[in-house]
Length: 435
Ligand code: UGA
Image 1 (spheres, rainbow, N blue to C red):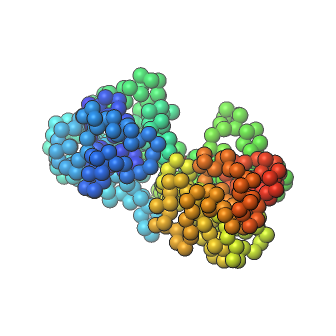
Image 2 (tube, rainbow, N blue to C red):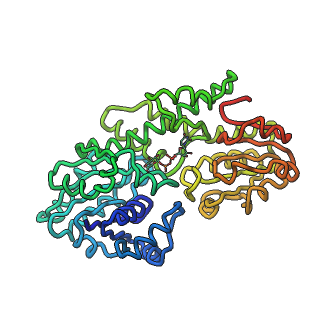
């Protein structure tokens, strides 16, 4: 199959390189010339484990190439994926579809022969209909079938998720497109990944329903964590105790400082807006959004109380700035609100993150950046773990105690057990436990 990927951001790049790895011929297109030039030289614009090597392997075989030329890339393609951004629209929180529609218009002017157009970007219900309408209006002679094929990969585990998906969802209403999509995903299909065929609108909704459900699940356990702290229960045991029930499932039940990232905050908001527009409001999701928003600042207050209530002039060290480990993505990271709350209350903040500091500098002001966890902790009145990077999981507490002004650990990801930290003379505060 000859596949063209319009948009070489997270989803476009990872999907493109994985399709090439399956044996398809893939061109990843982007308007940003500097990005394409960097990719041609093997430089990857995002931090994602394994991606650089996979790009190198597939460019060297010639199956993967990069281009800024939409026309040439589209003309030669059997399948064109639209994988451009759908950010929150300023003002109303709906998904901004202008990049998707611009891509549809441009693709329509160049298609030759039967071409399957696949929306991989996360788009609200009905977007596929509009993409099809735009394409037919732009080029009435174009022989195209418009398909929805949402992506479920997670940052930090993107390649693994793409190659071993729980399912592949394809929404379409055209038999030729069904054949093409089966061919595109044949390597996964043969690997037993279930291929769920449905209508285009249903497929679009599945993506939002999945993300909203996961966001709700996290928010549920976060509220249980708060209750655990009031009633002397332990949230990790609650998670295990309920997660072993196959109907509930153990994943996405880790209590923490609230979900962040480029997807859950944006997609829950867009779903809530769509639901309101169709007069079917989703109050569970609306409430999830507001609980999660409030939680991030509440985590800042939790730190303040763990330090004794007054942090004016105190130095607080933050370990982990990105919204989750194994990414350099700072979008909607809980660290931003935690740090802001600490600063508003007069603290001086020093932060460290293994990959996120370059992006952090763009969104967090007036903090000092350290070169490692021990450098961040030196002279600090408290150490706060906000993101559970592996390199924070085995800290040397004797070393930390010697250099910190006060031995206080606030572990917003529960990566330590209180007893192992307390035996080094530390005060420990976790999430959803008083132990
Ligand atoms: C999420 C979904 O998990 C993917 O399936 C989806 O494809 C993607 O959005 C998307 O729409 O593109 P991602 O945002 O990369 O993936 O990261 P997650 O691993 O889902 O984590 C999201 C947030 O939830 C993070 O802030 C994480 O720390 C938090 N989280 C996750 C918890 O607080 N507790 C958990 O148990 C799990």
